[in-house]
Image 1 (cartoon, rainbow, N blue to C red):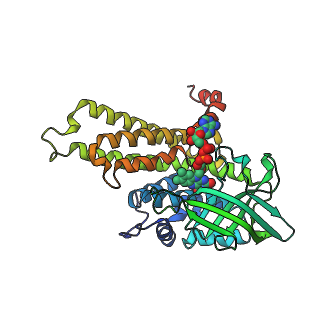
Image 2 (image 1 turned 60 degrees about the horizontal axis):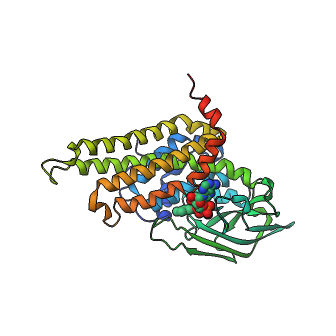
Image 3 (image 1 turned 90 degrees about the horizontal axis):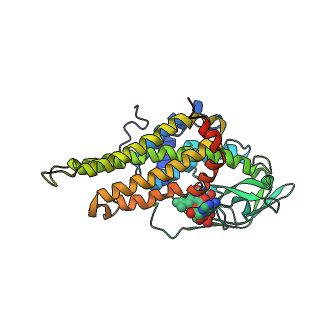
Length: 360
Ligand SMILES: Cc1cc2nc3c(=O)[nH]c(=O)nc-3n(C[C@H](O)[C@H](O)[C@H](O)COP(=O)(O)OP(=O)(O)OC[C@H]3O[C@@H](n4cnc5c(N)ncnc54)[C@H](O)[C@@H]3O)c2cc1C
């Protein structure tokens, strides 16, 4: 595999901002997109390789910060004009971090209930509301906010607004968690935030449609990252199990341990196979059923593999930053971007078609 970040040494140390800046400066960000152009969609192979390299070098929080920008924020910026074009150029250069704020103060699994409002005038927008548990909230230069411009749950009532983090009326506070250091996860408040009308991204009423396309890509990205993370942790766990200095009968010789480990290998290979089969379908057609399969697979695989690896590391798993800590962070694969239950419902909705595809 060619190195995307040659001779960078410790270039991917630091938090999400530093990692994003390093990826932008090296030109690596563009490798996630077809022809290097986010408006053409992601390239699943390039995206998977980039996430794998970032996962190998950076902390989980920093990888999370990059992942949501690569899969959702940057491609959404590419659908806009005016300020969004400038934001896109800065994002690709690594000089601007963009948060994507969809989850509202209401239940995240019930997106059309969201309360954040944008009043759209002839020349001006006024934004009011709040968002919670947003990656990059406390370290963003710009925030893409999903807001409603009309009351009610109808699909066409929602619109994206590009908000400079420094705009009057914007406040960010960190989420009360020690997990995800470097991801800038936090809560946002918008109080009478006034912006020129060109800060709308896409047409009014197209917000949820654009979100549906991009969340499919985020689900693919999550699955690609989950494969990389599971591979990394399994590799480290196996090395520990084989370590001859811990015992003259290393645990790797224990058949029960080997079978438990092998079950994880099967699960990771299944998720990897799904990514390889469905990656292009999500990247080019924004196929929601395929994305739901990937997201459900990622959530369930990461949970199982990280739990088994943590158990197999014994007491050492509880060391600071150890496998138990990683396991807690990896639970985000079953929450962020849609909880496992919700994506399983989407799989059930498409069950007939998904089963039919397995016929030979
Ligand atoms: C680290 C982290 C980073 C995040 N980053 C972002 C971000 O960058 N941008 C953003 O917009 N959001 C982000 N989120 C928010 C995330 O997308 C939401 O947490 C998620 O959509 C779930 O919403 P909720 O937390 O309100 O849970 P709820 O919707 O309240 O659900 C709580 C629980 O109820 C159960 N449940 C919910 N719905 C169903 C159902 N239909 N069937 C069965 N059970 C159900 C599930 O067990 C679920 O976990 C992030 C979250 C985390 C933890």
